[in-house]
Image (cartoon, rainbow, N blue to C red; front, side, top):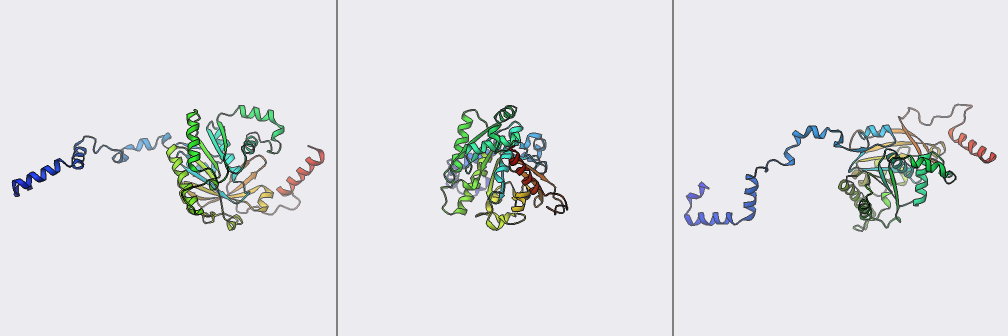
Length: 338
């Protein structure tokens, strides 16, 4: 202000009057002299080391697979979006059921949205996963199902929507309604996101971008992990290992996710109950590795193991392959009426 003295008195009065009547200037001045002006969250990062290293700093929900849990530093966390990619009939939906079943076993509340399969059939898949009774036989084992479900610690809610009609806002509204009814979800599963609709775009690629961006925002807003699945294109479905550039319609949907892995299964794999998991993206650790898998789609039992140097090697002479053993067992059961 001392520099104003070199000007005339009338000019000084005009400048000071302007500043005093400028609300933005006065507010900024008040903020600067306020004691807590420099005491904001942005300046505390270095001093909050202890908070960041507390166990609850990132709350995660384990998957059924220890290898994946290690890569995710415990599991999918609050606000994370995880994706499983694969070809048609490859086992994506079964993998989502396995993820939901594991969370329920651990005592979490899971809401499973299905846009492809009916609520009843998804429920039967969960029953098969919990009881290890074949999904085709589950209706004949009601007492076993009741006993196993009664011992579960968590909760499971299944909601069906027609493909192409539900949007991310539809999911959001339903979740809010669940919370109003004292149903607090810990994990959300959507089978699958590509079948949601977006009214903000016309092109398929833009729709998918909007959908996945919306789901990522929903996970962040509600502080809940979301697992979903996605289709790969035709060439990807035929490949030994599905890479990230084989995503159908939109590559950016993988970029939006926090964790993405693909499941590759050819005709031989489906006969032998095998497959390959490839880590396409991982914000929390390493990616680019591939693991072997054994998959029993009759009960939804999926195992992910370290990859051997030889995959699906030839069956030793005189031994039956897994596919031959399965066909022999089925023939025996049909012959004896088991």
